[in-house]
Length: 393
Image (cartoon, rainbow, N blue to C red; front, side, top):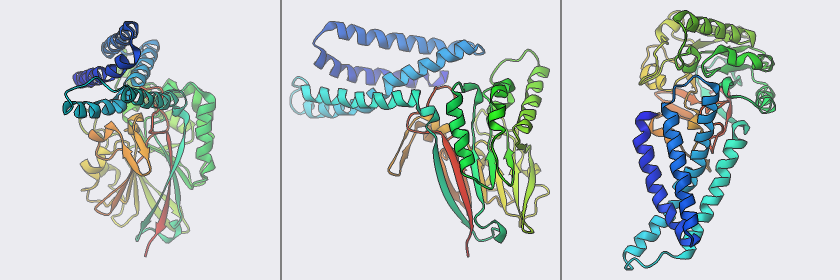
């Protein structure tokens, strides 16, 4: 995050300057101006300090999370309301720069107020505002016995961020309510430590699917983001996390493949360890996972990071019909309305939320069940994905 601070600071300053014009026009008092700038300086100072604080303390992490929420509450309404002032400035440019119109500043403040309510909902209720998203995919080579086969996918639980028992249970009940044939989990069960799951094991063990529950590891599951007292302690944490998958009833796939049988026919589930572009570890090995899989098998791949799809899967010699991923969270911030979809994460990940298709192969990127960093979600709500497989002619 530190390397993005200059851009964040620049955007903050630009929006600050323009939004202050509306505050100044409407306030008519220096007291409001002083208060406005004091809040901004304090927020920026605290957030910059938080970026460079050594992580590890739960108290520190909670402070950082709340600061992020306050930053968004201050920044997002300004970001999407200042274009009104910019448009006014363009017209003022051709009118000799007369004083700002009072009604334009009122409109700017009104838009900001509405957006503030949206952000406030996101950081208070959005983290458990679960949405069920459905896709139906057709394949000519899907075995007849699996026509109508249903998958419920969840991902990115991040149990270390949970505090609301009722909210989490609401999501798990919604998963069971789908009554899918299988439940597939695509990584990041915890933030860092296996012990984060201890309070939630009974709840997640209640998930049911007639043909089983299967899972993989995500980048956060390896404990790479905190300091350990020794390499043995880090390895013990990973060993314990693998046991947790078993305790909640999930079959953890570690660069391996299994078959699901139905009426004498089969499909293959493949699970790889985390593989991500950039600075993320490339633990997974798709070739090892598919070594014993027949070329003509119908294959579904669980791979946590969607960058694995274009980086490895699309050009792999084994045809992977469907890849299920997570990882991006949709950045937990964005807009999805009337078919329009946007989040800043799209400038980092080409495939960041929803369904994608290339070379006759599908990728579905789940927006995530839990949350990390920001204690909530704004516009990109937590997701339970239900995919129905159909045989086409």
